[in-house]
Amino acid sequence: MSELINNRTYRIQTMKETIKHLHRGGSADEVRGKLRDLVRETDAAEIAAMEQELIAEGMPVSEVQSMCDLHSSVLREILTIQPLQPGVAPGHPMDTFRRENEALAETIRRMRDVMEEVAAQPDDGQPANALQAWRRIYNDLMDVEKHYRRKEHLLFSCLERHGITGPSKVMWGKDDEVRTLLKSLGEALSAEGATVAEWRIVITTVAEPALTAVEGMISKEEQILFPMSFGALTEDEWGEIWRQSPEHGYCLVEPRAGYQPPNPKEPERLAALASNESLVFPTGALTPEQIQGLLATLPVDLTFVDADDRVRYFSDGPARVFARSKAVLGRKVQHCHPPKSVHIVEQILEDFKSGRHNVAEFWIPFHERFVHIRYFAVRDPQGRYLGTLEVTQDLTRVRRLEGERRLLQYDDQKEKVA
Image (cartoon, rainbow, N blue to C red; front, side, top):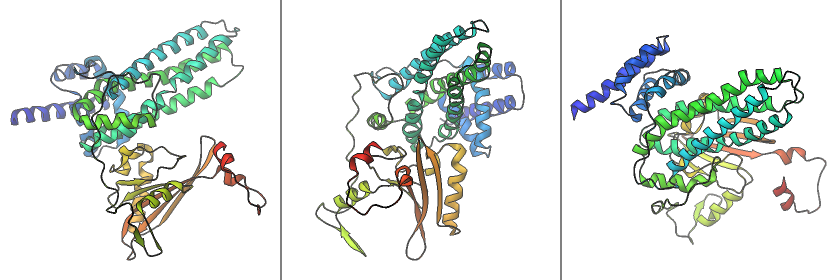
């Protein structure tokens, strides 16, 4: 056993040094040769462990992300996509993830065909039909957001329970890079009156980098993330992912019939109270049913993070601003945010724990809405830090109010439309 452990340690250490050599400007051919023999014995989990160790040793996540494409391009030529293990039923979350990647690859192929048609037009041509097709295919490609959200909020959450945090730190950042490139492509495609020569520039400088980035993530998932996940997660966790996936939606395909998840475990009791008992507060008493109804009715979204930085509760009203899945419960809040914003989360938590501040607030445009986000330090009567409360509110309608209203008027239907 010690020999196997030492061999694994040796392989991870060798990969780390080889990849760092590549990042420092070493020859890709030289690195490829060193890795070729090594990867015959390694697996996806060791590659992920290599990235995780680099982070643990102090290398900034941003630098690991910049290395990711370099070593992925080398590993892509060496590693082969592993078939799913026997017994994976159609409709299993892994089956759906991989079918989505196949559909994304086909969508990219279709887009490149249309781009070639646009580029082949004479400089004074009018590729109106091809442009319309290009824009339609772009809309299809943007379905990738659903794939990424399920990966980030469900798959990563389960992996972190097994101590595998590297993918969420590195891949989420790469996902955000893909999102940025696709957004730029969408902005370019919205242009009117561009010449064919200008569209050729868009293809070279905007479209191809975006498509290449999507393909790169497909490769990283298929060669590293998915095999590692399939080996690490339990059947109960796959069932949990399956049950929560509809909250985020599916990318270009629907799950096939055939997968039967295990019955969910008996849920933990939310409070040590019978349904007819009340929890007594200094200003009144409420039953568990009343508490749940009250929290779900508030015109704000609530999320509570405890003193150990773990998500312990979120309200589940009918119109949440930001989606939440139950997989985040118990998860470190730092892992629930893309890497580019983690430093802000860390700063707020540090300031609240130290007592320097008690409130932090932001307001942002979000999907044509005006959203107000506030963070409050939660303390006991002696001032001891208990956690942080996030309160998110859609203020779009409130900002439009003018004058006054003194007569009774119900706006239930109007608010639903708004």
